Amino acid sequence: MSAADMDELPGAARALLDCFDQPELRPFLADWPGPGASRRSVDPRPLPVLQWLDRLAPHAAGETRPLVDGIVAAAAQLAWGQTYAAADFGARFLERYGWSELVGLRGPVASDRLACGVLLLGPDLEYPAHSHAAEEIYLPLAGTALWLRGGEGWRPRRPGELIHHPSGIAHAMRTGDQPLLALYLWRGGDLAQKSTILGAAGDRQEGPDDHA
Ligand SMILES: [Fe+2]
Image (tube, rainbow, N blue to C red; front, top):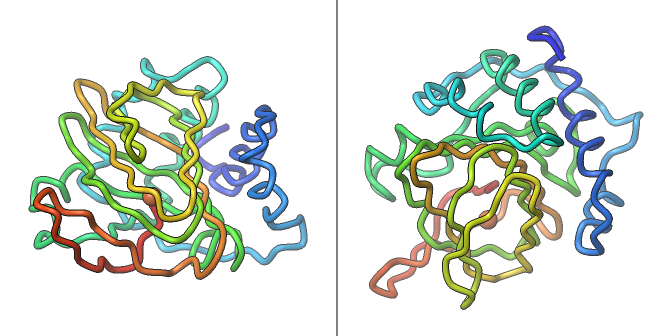
């Protein structure tokens, strides 16, 4: 994949997902838009988190490396967004966090049933616990981070390891020395629904539109 192949990223993501035969993934792939889905042009929008792109490749798995390389090469053409403001998790979080949608309400492939994109986190960052009604799957592409799901506690998750978040379950991520690039999939309900941030002191607040 070359830098000119941004249009190939959704198909490359789907091809990677097709390598997994896990039952949790099937309803997501059933909702994946067909070849006739409309395409949108997106206006490139960079974010500070892109400074860690060049540190991803050594931390990819063999099967995820081609997609990592494609995303890194096309990153400058993608629209990178943030769900949160400095008031939510602080200014440092915004320097190390961003996502870009490939399929969904805003991405280059249109769908109102499924959202798919990539989340990029810089090193030494915690994405605090949150929950949402949408069912979610993550596939880490590069970087081994600690992931928290419900009452399971923090567990290291490696690239190529599918993580399923059923509707409403609390989840969080914590990066260490390595940045993290992960594919995310959302389905079920309103793709632009509110996410609930689960504060450390047990306080709760509604966040803005959340896709990861
Ligand atoms: Fe989530």
